[in-house]
Image (cartoon, rainbow over all chains, first blue to last red; front, side, top):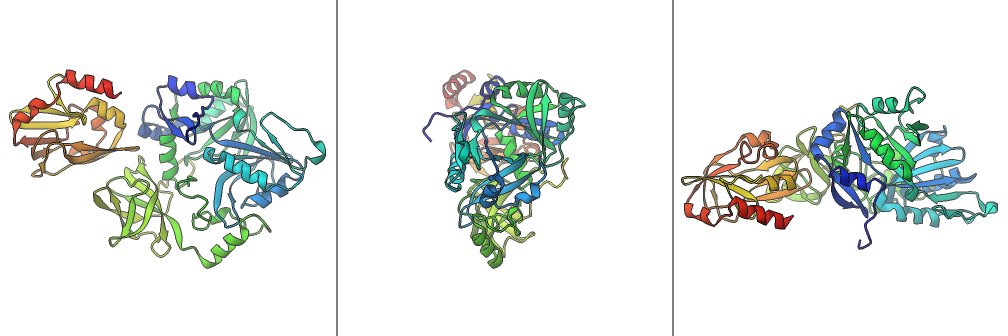
Length: 381
Length: 127
């Protein structure tokens, strides 16, 4: 990408905190502040905040919103019929290839909020736009086009005017409670609620990408800085970068789109068959995914644990000296003190307990197939 | 940050010379660039090392760095405590974070290594 890097509303805050910045999905993002391991441990033991303003937000509303999204997404929106309910879902192409993984919220009457990966923002929007019924009006940014006669569904890309900050860890809810006062009724897991934090109107979502309890807070772009500073004013809260975000999510086996799966992979092979509805009638990719489910996929995403060395993306995974796959996600688990990785393996090898090897540069080290989550005990489980 | 009684090379190792024994570790600059060290791979006593060639590796969560031998010789001692507590390298790079001791086959080789002052200039240019 040669375009000018994008910045979140918290860019100056990161510099002021001495963050080491990296380029991610076209954004200049903090990789780490105090250190990846220290930040990781802060989230597992206390609380951390993450700038996730780079993620994309789409809002879909109108009388046709539900039916439109039922045709685009793999999970069944009937599961989140209740206002404020949310779930994890996928958007696939006709072959079952995963375009993106998303959280969809039933955020209001006739309205859904969708949060997706920053890197896929344009692809997602273009896919949703081009797979709209004829009578859908597109509304982008604040440049609203008024054609009330055709507003069966409106699709708005709100990414540029929305801030998103994650507060995660066993002490996250205490901090939130203190900030919100007794007026806030905490949303249940995978639910969203309106709240006012200090003076800032927000949406509080009981979701996250760390395996710890906590929330993701949606606010207006212009309030992100104040919200960030307010959260950091608590001694329990540590600023955390993308480095810790990656180690935390991989310890839980949460997939990362673009690394653990992409357009070339179907949900069944990626181990995400559970978010593909078996009840729903028609959605894009349903026939292909059903076929794969019946025939069983050739490869499946499996977990690996190494005792020495760190398996990194692209490293060869071997069985009896023969390559059987390449590491997709791989890192050091600060909680376990071991190497952890994901890899697509032929199904007959992907069985837990199988002993394999990973080529870590000049050496070959033992790697045990183990189903994620690699870390079994957190504030969530 | 760069003790004056040590010698340095351009791969960011430091060397403490005592007779024909060279103790080797990585500099403050190297550990800071790397971030928290989570894994070290070091040679065993008796292994020979070659000037300018890798003798081991240090890894942080995000990156891997090779360790280069600043002199020729034979490894006589290895800091075993780094295996279980590699973070010592960050906490005390010039003390408890030492990595190996080399019995130099050609002790005069240390003369071409950088002084602390020279190394500091080199590092400033790298930054």
